[in-house]
Length: 158
Image (tube, rainbow, N blue to C red; front, side, top):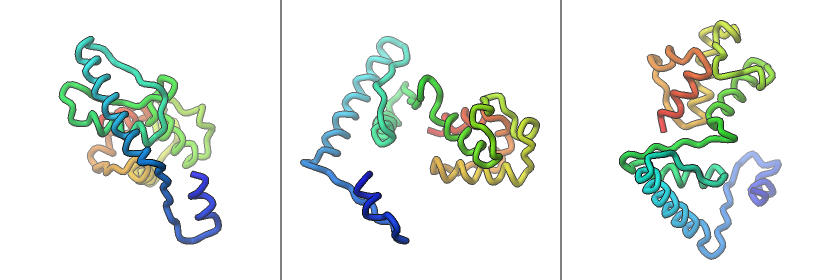
């Protein structure tokens, strides 16, 4: 992170620098994949959810990827018991509507509570598509009128 900042500070072009000492990254990915499979087996065996220690976004991605085709297992990232999607959606709404993020809940209605018009909703959908690297159809977008519906939709895409 610091190397990227130092290299790119004040530059119009953005270079991505990755430092991988003694193949650490590949070893960590392998270790996380083994952990994911072990936890998936436990979840199936005991028929209950399993939680892992807090991880950075890259490590969470490795876990989700390792289990994406694992039969009978779904994955979700949470932060303090809340979906990471909720925090990102709330952040986007707070920025777009110049609100205190704490005032936005899962029950917040985009139109009734925030006064969003159709252009506001389109802008929000576009920012969420960019943030999460997904495409949200117009049909689906029409159903996303509360924060809770948006969060549920994003969680079910993964």
